[in-house]
Image (cartoon, rainbow, N blue to C red; front, side):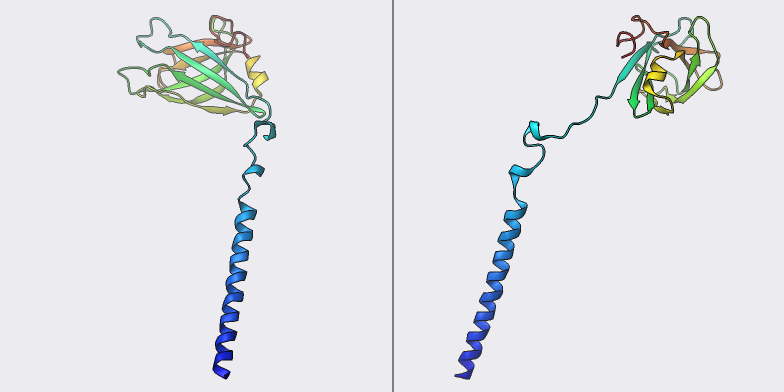
Length: 183
């Protein structure tokens, strides 16, 4: 009789552990599987994503007579908090060259010329997706109102040779700004 009591106690302990495990598993499965409470299922329940990021793109035409063909460019200013991400891009690179082009934001307009206000990163001219991005410590509004222009030069060694240039900010007009006035 004593041996049957041991088997009965072992079986009861096994069943008790089994039921505890099963009820714990069911609790976690039902607690974690609540599709109706997920954010994103109902567009009305999504939190406000905040304001849209503002950006403007300026055209920088090829400078005639520079001997480098196919070098029209654009530069995009994108709001990045209280700074601005500036991305100059050569369309189709500069075929037949292995040059790293330097780019600057200058003061004044193309006709008046002026000193360098901001240095932009080098642009790999051999890459068809030739672009560079530089985070400038000025607000989007400051740069889109800036009295300036951009030059993309042939290279650091040859700053006198300008590949592409165009007015930006306060000097931009509809002919070189595909966003109609800066925004």
